[in-house]
Length: 148
Image (cartoon, rainbow, N blue to C red; front, side, top):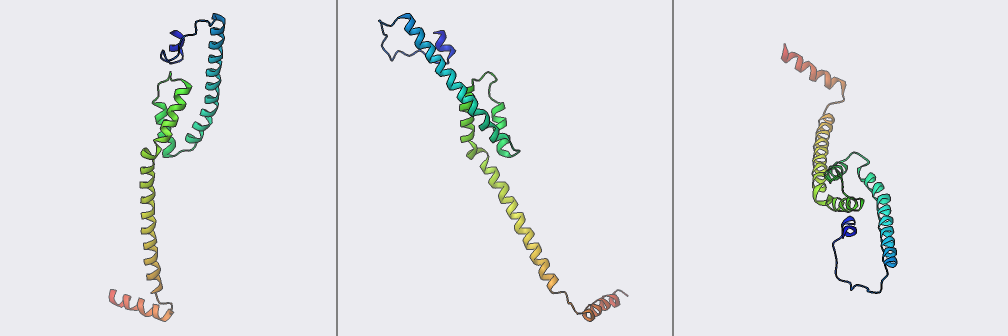
């Protein structure tokens, strides 16, 4: 039972016991199973790190969300558990981060539209300014005479 707890497994009675199985064969199977678990954990560690680094490597709302979610995990969580949680966190991006990103992009696009409108109005007003120097003089002299 201690071996099952160590591996985070529950006892299963779905297999019939093998009465002719020797203790040496049982130990051999157990050692092979432990080696497989260790190899799997090593593969997960090697793959988990670079994927995590890619997701949090650049400052963004996605990186912030992922880092906060990873920081909330228990410190004693196994590498397999951390990798599984990273998959869950990544799957949750659509619900958690994308609405904020879409809102930010919409706000930026609205500001660009407003700025473009200001530029268009300025261009229209600029186009109405006379280019004839005598017309400019008559305009400014009319203003000067009104101020006097």
